[in-house]
Length: 350
Image (cartoon, rainbow, N blue to C red; front, side, top):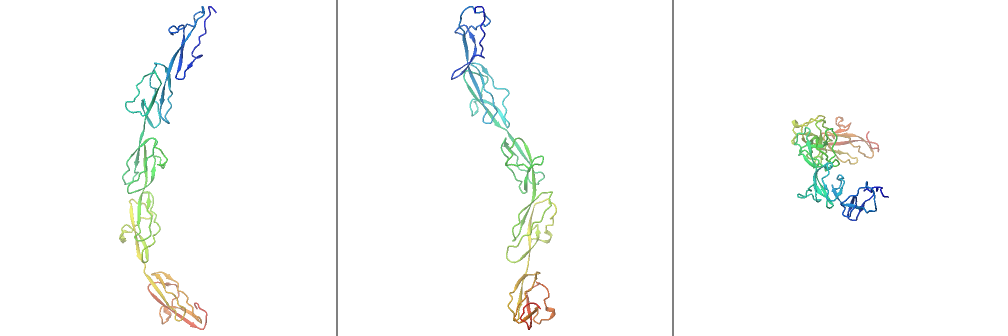
């Protein structure tokens, strides 16, 4: 009606999107050239036409990389200046190196802000992975500490050794065992060696004995004795610190702590073998017995039909002093003579 006003239709009530761009609504105008904005407080005195003003919009898109932080795109009117987002984006384990015009983030492709938005733009974040130092502490080991390692964030350190000593593992400052295969590096860290001395064993003709690893605070436990594997018969006689196995070189630290690496050598003592021969004097034959010196041998009982076995003697004169009454202790080659009593067909000892 004449004298009334027109309720303003704002951008909340109207918008326009074409296939290629969005547009923002910038008010109503009384002329097609959009130079005279309409005053909605003015009285209406007749019919008239209002013209909507639209301004094209462009979007600045930020690409931060897979797994990177989200930076919201910025959409503004055409010819609006846009600065880089502030503050800079943050990504754990990485250092932000600026915005670039291509994903390669090569030198010379740095973005020059502010951008005057006369088209859509996409910019790319450059990231440099942080590097951290893994320091290895020998923890009192006499050997040289391994070189420090520089490791990318999220990557894994390599487990080192200490030349000349055994490393059971590495621990953190609080004594927790460090799992190299499953613990990514996320900051500087110092690892401490859990180490021990090495006892190597040279059996010198005997069966192999595995190395032993002994922490400085642990007592040395003697391994099971090796067995002789060469020709002849030998008896293990202890471990020595030299291959000559001199009496003065006997290793005597079993059950105590040690403060050095050792290679220990087995000493062997030859065990002489002797033959026990049996003369049965008419009885069934008895095979000879070969036995080591000092061993105890139970002598066999021969059989002779119609006779009773009356014992073994070490002399064919059968003196009572030559009778063997207990298990025989081997001291050398020996011939035994069987004594018989006639009149029975039962074999066996009397």
